[in-house]
Image (tube, rainbow, N blue to C red; front, side, top):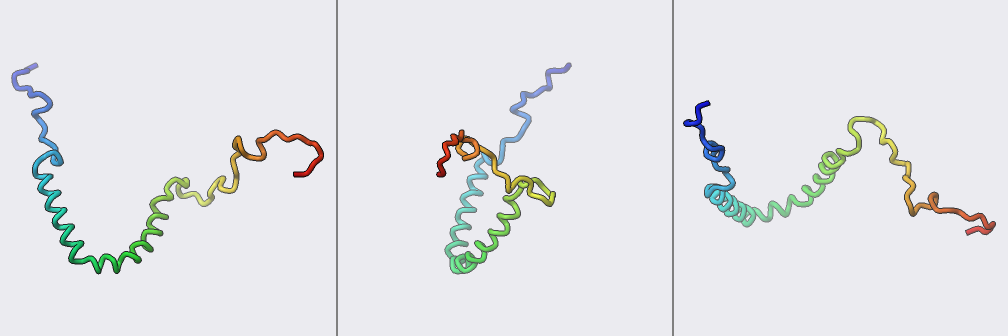
Length: 100
């Protein structure tokens, strides 16, 4: 093995972008651009806001219902209730002849 040309692991990779001074400049430039866009186009944004809220409903339905089990047609046990500690089926019953 030739160890004369080996470099430590920290020296062979470049520093991350988000830790550099260029990232701070990019964030400042983006903040200035966002300020001017929002201040100049506020009426357009507020005019489109009701439509964006209506568009959010089907998009949330599509992307947030991923846990229903995939492409199967049935929904499984949606109608079945699990018996917990507080459900009436799990409480001990005493038959005294009285109606509740």
